[in-house]
Amino acid sequence: MSTWARATALAGGVAGILVGVAGVATAGEVAFTKHSDRVDVLLDGTPFTSYIFTGYAKPILYPVIGPGGVPMTRSYPVEKGVAGEATDHVHHESLWFTHDEVNGVDFWAHRPDADGRSPRIVQTAMPTCEDGVIVTENAWTAPDGTVVLTDTRRYVFAGDDSERTIDVQVTLHASEGEVHFGDTKEGTMAIRVRTPLQLKDGSGSEGAAGHIRTSEGLVDGDAWGKRARWVDYYGEIEGVPAGIALFDHPDNLRHPARWHARDYGLFTANPFGIKHFDPASSEPGGYTLPAGDDLTLRYRFVFHGGDVDSDDLEQQWKAWASR
Image (cartoon, rainbow, N blue to C red; front, side, top):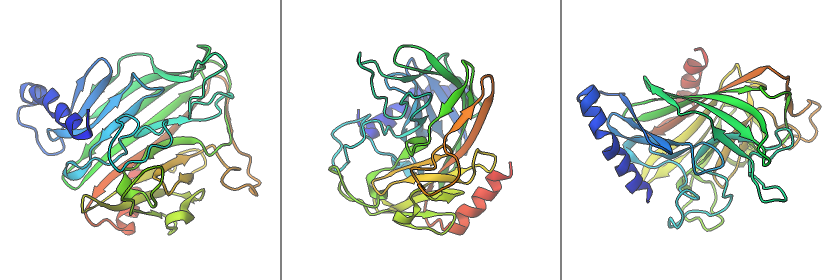
């Protein structure tokens, strides 16, 4: 199913709920519909995203529809054969949270073991959905079925005609014993942008014309591996100004985050990787979460249209970070 067909299905799937429960939708109203494999999210009666919790090696959000009904993330590999899209990195699935080298297990690329079994992040109960919030419980499961750790995720959806936001809070629980997160660039809070927001074409993509800017004033290729409070990929989609910013909360581990910000459209906030980004750093990389302890990480995605400059994003970050 194409992204646009998927968006139409989202709108049709919840129309009855909007009328039957809330009457006519008002500005900023979020509605949910649960299915056996996903939860569909609408904003003001229009498609926003789906939280998909089966069919993939981890929970993902896809598609992500921005202001004006414009898809904001790459379709591949959820949808294949979309003209002009790159087909690299099959594990880059729209919007997700995970990390490589978790007690030695690759939860990023999901590399299988000798028996062909892959690590997975598995939802352990149907999510709760109310007041614009989805809450989920998940188990990080090694190829042999051993649970390495568990997590609780909280997604908050909001927006208006010019901007949409997704707040993601992940609390990692060392419920099964000590957990070590490896010092690697392959993580952690991640998104793969749509082709026009990429800096460069590659792996079959056509039409890349975007840019990167950071809270520290770095642009484009200079952003990779550097620390910043936020990073924004921006440009034009279908001839209209658009962008995706990701905010790192000041309470997060090692804030401001280091950024795995690639010219081909991947960008991630990574609290665990150091040496891959800065081999000369004297700061120890990785992180060990003691048995029984928790670690909470908070992020905000801003899907913006129109003319949004760095000052606008900085003021938004400050308002969000003070909460």
